Length: 181
View (cartoon, rainbow, N blue to C red):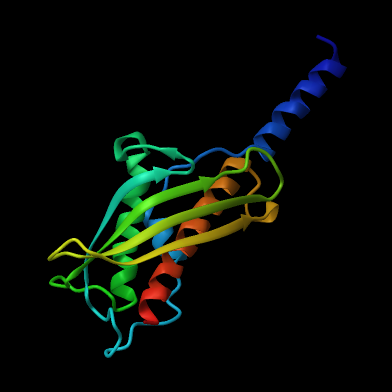
């Protein structure tokens, strides 16, 4: 192998390391740290301290119909835990509340390659009356987060930052929607 070939190979490997992204594992602690409470539910609000549980009940993932066990359950478990924590922080949670918040559809779009990594998250939520299983609210929330090259040198870490940012913003947004009612 010539020195020229070696330099090219080394350059290609470093470029791949720096620019490549991939699907990442969600970390509940990282998600919780990114969620900002902008508005809390008011005591006279429709859902103030009335949501008692969170559940992933995935019926659709992107354009493909799937069952829950076909999805990375660890990711959805992290999202569930962070969502429950956020409901508490937004004054929407109560142990004996009459409602359950379900995530019923999800889609995420990860970058494959690039200096800046943008991750899109689309989750559809349903608020269910526990007593009769009636859906009283359905909301689809689209969010995106871009991790810049200066946030992390390695592409996989930028993809992770972007994924956590997109899902944290998604959780924030649904909590804001519920808190403002």
